[in-house]
Length: 145
Image 1 (cartoon, rainbow, N blue to C red):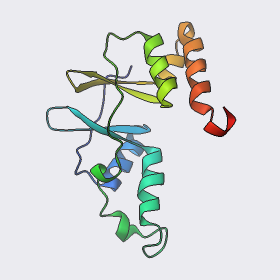
Image 2 (spheres, rainbow, N blue to C red; image 1 turned 90 degrees about the horizontal axis):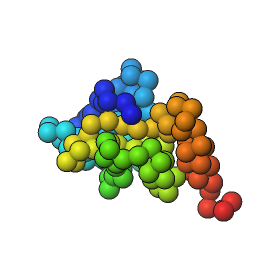
Image 3 (cartoon, rainbow, N blue to C red; image 1 turned 60 degrees about the vertical axis):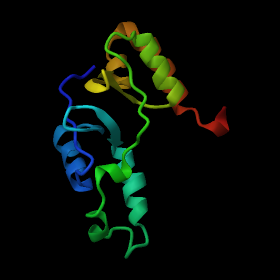
Image 4 (tube, rainbow, N blue to C red; image 1 turned 60 degrees about the horizontal axis):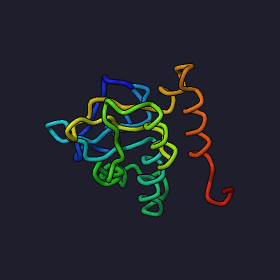
């Protein structure tokens, strides 16, 4: 898991979230309170699908003025699935597969301590099977099952 986790607050702007992702070459940001408690998560996909679609038709699909009023709390996913630091890689991979997610916050007492991604699992040769199984489950759409 990655342990150098950058969190943003619920009142962070869409532009701040996107800038943090670009500057740190990451695809997701946990949304935390001042004590580090996980409140939600924003992914690069959330920015495109939730934020841009929300403003579509305001004055056009690329209306920057409409985008400036969007905050992390407006587009973050809540009801987070997380895992404890002592969970096995196999159990974490099962969660990724079951919930069709690619990133899993690692929490202790509801505070974020790390982030485990499908790529983290795949980067260890001993866990390639778990990563492959999780990716297969994530990639299968309802219509193909």
